[in-house]
Length: 327
Image 1: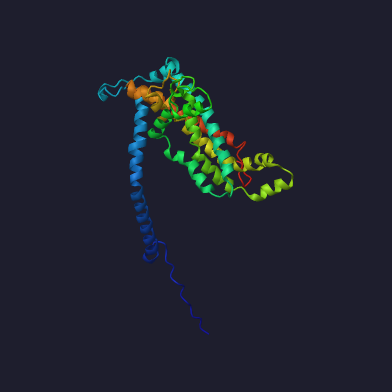
Image 2: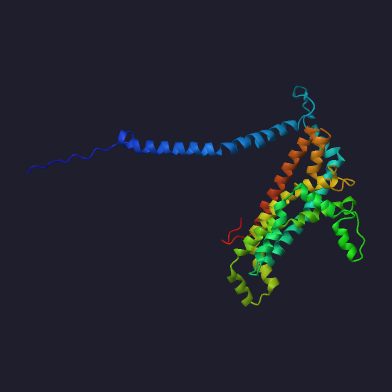
């Protein structure tokens, strides 16, 4: 009986025309999609290069020069680390601005977060009209660091302002708060604390994610409200607290608009509101020492980076996530 040999099907290698066709079409599709993505990203990329990356590199170069805006580029002199040496050794206004900024951040940021968390706890209830109150508390944050808000704040805390008029109703004599060196910075702190709406909304979102079963179990174990807050709310909110702490600390160090408006761009009275960024502005655009101001800006950037790194480095000791893993 004859055996008929059945020919094996021809195996087409990856280089054959039929095998290449699907892969080639898919490759062309992916390439066209990638090109379209870059086209849509091009405005952002152009903005990143023109508004952020190139100016940053230019300011880094200027920080090693004596550039003063008015001098032509051909006459700019390279001074090396002279600007940085002056900053740390022979400029008392620099260290005064550092102290003012640290005082502002160390006082205003914790109080702002405490106010935001407290109000969030009050608004995390099914009360009638709670949505309206949430909107009202968030409204100041929508105004942000606007000049108009700073002007209103200055007028409110003048000698004849609304705050002193309210104190007069109780027989208390007011002060020219914004013109008093002992109280000018405190008025800026109150303004910053009053704008707690943004972290409040984030705290509210975090509170919504806390399982109610944890509170029920704590209540069964006899834990009161304060104990539940310490043992359940704070640990479950620790990632949100960490997020708000990092953002608000950076914003606190970058305070500028209110200090500029209150002092008419001088940092007064008696340099009591001379924030770091305001001092940088004065050096660069008032004293026309742009090289020195650029050095101040880079030191500021490095300091913010170090502070942020410290937060992330210490966060693993107190930030707890719902999956049981600390990061």
